[in-house]
Every structure is written in structure tokens, then in C-alpha cells.
Length: 110
Length: 165
Image (tube, rainbow over all chains, first blue to last red; front, side):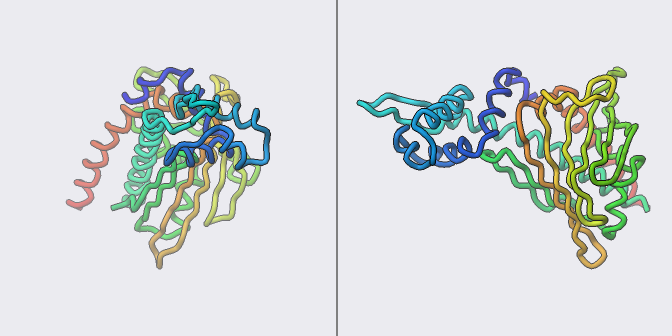
């Protein structure tokens, strides 16, 4: 079972990571390119420290990785982490597809 | 094909299913409104759902449990946030303890169901948004996945019956 690959703690971190609009926006950006933390901070109406906290939440959920380069901290998407999130959605999709099929069967009885 | 499309957004942790049925909108609405019909499809065949409460009205609550192959029980609840019969239904969906009380810490899913008339047929769109935490993982832990595989077999059997009829 795919979900066996996740511990409860891992799932908690993953869902917590996605539960915020700013973090989702950061994810969309770093999935396609590198950003420095200060570069990200300039995009949002919040402090550098607040953005740094969001990045830390994403990092704990293994969705991004951070690397120090000179004076900058570079953030990029962690594709393995994203793939895990995608697999969870795959499971959910299967549940709903089966439900739709059962509905069709009930409707077909008449 | 019943299921026309499904779309997943990893970033938004949301999921959209579009399905079309050979029945009118009022008939498809009934499978949500009538708890006896709802419990025939909400849970998989190995984890059938029993709805003990189904207040199908804005602000209403539903309470159900699913019974597993070993007799184990898994509880759930809905909180209906919007109803426009027979076209739109919105509800929060969460987990419940053995007494049917919501376990808020487990997180909720928000579902928006819309039905559209396609000249006698019906298009149903279900949008699910995950608000927090690991409810999806728990759901699968409850044995839904095994159930789904079995459901696939049952559906094939049913379809075969219908085509003979």
C-alpha cells in the first residue's frame, strides 16, 4: 500500500506544509526555478523572518531543499517530496473513481 | 465511461472528479439525499457505510460509520455548509470517534458537488479540498484501498449482468 511509505508524522508535515497560501505559492515558484530566501521575501508583504519560517516548514516536509551559496540561501523544489504528495492524491482519486462507478451501478438498476 | 476526468493539484492539495450518468439531475441528487442510497456507494464493498444521521439541510450534520471485514468500525461525519437542491451540495467531511463525535485534530476535507443537466443525463463534479493533516492517509489505513480493489471486481460482475439483461 502506497500510504505505508508515509509515517503519520511525515503526513502531518506534508499536510501542514500545504495548508497555507504563501507556502503553496512558494512551492509553485521553486518547483520550476531557484529562488534565494531574500528573493522570495521581496515577493510577499511580510518580513524576511516570516518567509524564512515558511521555507523551514516546507523543508521539514521534504518539499524543498535549501543550500547556502555565499551570503544567500537558495531554495529549490524537492521533486521526491512532491511526488509523495502526488501519490497521496492518486489514492484519493482512486477512491472517488470507485464511488462514481458504484453510483452508476445504482442508477443503472432502474 | 462514467468518469470523464479527474484533475489533481498537488500544490493546492485539491482534487476534481467529473462523471456523467445516464439519469436526470433529480435522480442523481437522490443518491446524495437519501441515506439508504448514499450508504450503498459511499464506502467500498468491504467497508460499507451506515448513516445513522443525515440532516440534508444547510447547517445539518450527518454521522456515519463504516464496518470492516473483521467487524471493526471507522466513524465519520459531515457538516453541510450549502445546499441548493438539486444542483449544489457543499460539506465538510471528517473523522469521528466511536461515539460519532468529530475528531477535529484529524483534519477535514471540504467537498463541493455540482450537478448539471445534459439534456436528461447528468454531469457531476466533485471538488475536494484538503484543509489539513493526514485524513487521507487515515482513510486508506481504514482499509479503503483493499476495498476498492474488491469493488472493481464487483462492478465488472454487475456490468456483465446488465449487459445480459
